[in-house]
Image (tube, rainbow, N blue to C red; front, top):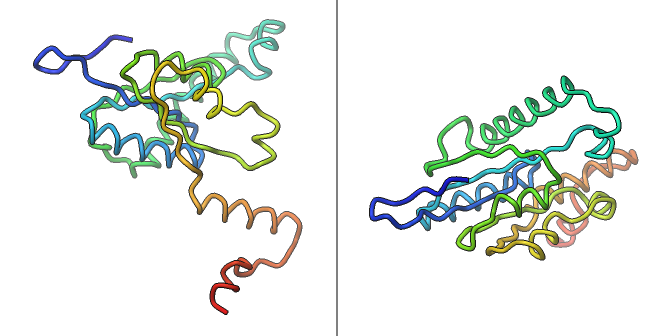
Amino acid sequence: MNGSHQDDGRPVGRVVVGVSGSLGSLTALHRAVAEARRTGAVLVPVLAWEPPGGEIGYRRSPCPPLLAAVSAAAEQRLTVALDTAFAGGDPGVPMHRVVIRGETGPALVEVADRAGDLLVVGQSGGLLRRRLRRSVTAYCVREAGCSVLTVSRPELQHELEVLHRRNQWHLPVGPAPELVRAKG
């Protein structure tokens, strides 16, 4: 990646943020914008993608047209995520979008390759998803050569997951028990 410079020749910092479109990643994106604005850095939203079946599956059965379609869908997904996060507007900071082929954690660490970078990652998915897949956040904290800012899942995401589980199990949906106790 080419480095940008300020008018006085000093390099401009970068705030690299993983974006998938999940509520957790959009929360991280907003935090990354705040950090970029505060420090005068360039925002680098990154969406990582893999071929269907992963790299091993693709090597076994390569299909260039499918790969091109998945790559284009990843570009579109990043555009939609940014439009969703900023209501179609400008975030107010310089931005360099990156769509990269690879597993999310290693791809983010690859992009955030400068000591002065700040890598911002959010938490997404519920407990089951985090148990089934390797933690991107833990990977980035362990492997990144730059500072890493982890952004907690928004409370709304937790509430939506609880509501979704209750709905799946056909349980009554009402105020959360902690809200009832707080009022009583």
